Image 1 (spheres, rainbow, N blue to C red):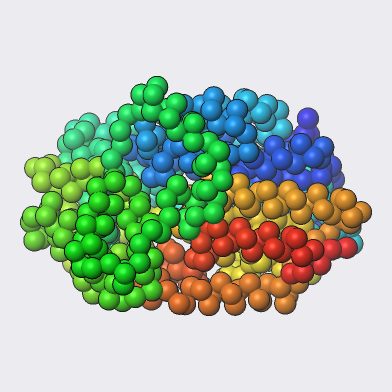
Image 2: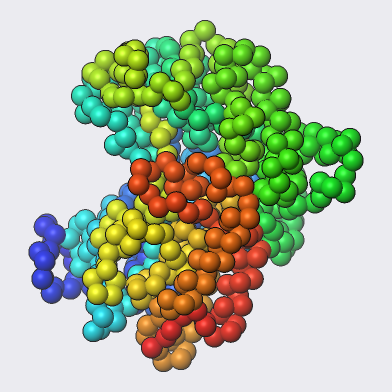
Length: 549
């Protein structure tokens, strides 16, 4: 057992409570699998998790309507056919409670809980150059000496909570969606305000509209959306997808986005009639396929992006009908192109705005200036009186999980300071200057909305496990990127990104939602299969972008 103290150790305290081979930060999809793999290697490893249970994203995001927008049958671990087949999803896009239960099933099946310390946040991680080891400190006062520090903190896990002046003056209840309380939140009859209409905001809005007294939606950036079709699964449906296990295992990790579908069509090879037929057919699928497996040219060609964007715009406008609502909720033709921002899935979302108790308020040119005791005040002086404020205000994506703890590498370098200047990694797996810190779900690897996360996180943790195994087999103890290797990866990443339309837009993809954050596409856009191939080539070539000692 780890020894804990009531107070955090003081600077210069050389006390160590526990010596490990590896510390894993986080017990979500990545952390659980990483813990399992390193334990299978015979390493002394422990995971530290801030929550009281496993799940990561699916532990923290328990807001009304939270659910997959990846199909359940591909949002699974693929290293074990038995593990895959013994779990059955109840529907195509399962909800948060079911997903959390699945991750608990995995934890129980692999007997992982005995090596996880819950209700414990990693607060600092300092690299000792003389010893080639990390000192990890936690919120419970633990001091751990470890060879490897492996971060599985999640791409979207650092919420943008303190966004407005006066939040502490509000007389009602206010919270961020990713910190939704475990206990029931009474919304019946309440005046509720939702700030944000991204993927999370949409799920909340469409779920609570018929339960609250009055719902005010504060909308800044209009979103392209796609309808979700979410059939319940029968035992026959479950048996059918389980029979595809081998096919899924062999194909999904090599597609563009780690889904069960991939690009099938080329715009120029189709007639206008064929293009429309294809778009209609894929749109009717009720998934993210239109975004991630229709025409790849939407990411590169202004004209093709405009054509597909107009197709989606018209679908949305046909349902909204009201021009005022269209102006607030639907991107204008010159705003940005379909797919260059995160594309949410929705279920009867637009119809919500036709309810008498729902009001859409545009804050695009009349921003929220502060929270006042009564509610929200806008720039024009209007005050919207509310009982509950729900902040669907997003995250410090990619960098936030590590910037919010004190990570220091060679020479006392601060990772937060480095990333405040320029966001750089080596393949999203390590950062130059931070030896033996191996990373998942950080910038410059496929993650978040450009990858089905289980697909990406499995591959990243497997690469990390193999790198650690290689070190031990070679009798070495330290691995770190070279400056030249990192520079080459950043150049490759930027070259691919700048060939697309994505960097021409403002969104959390580019870090634009966080004031002062360096601008760079956070997710690798070359494709999941391509990235996997490059990681494999790096390992097979003897890790030329890294040095080992």
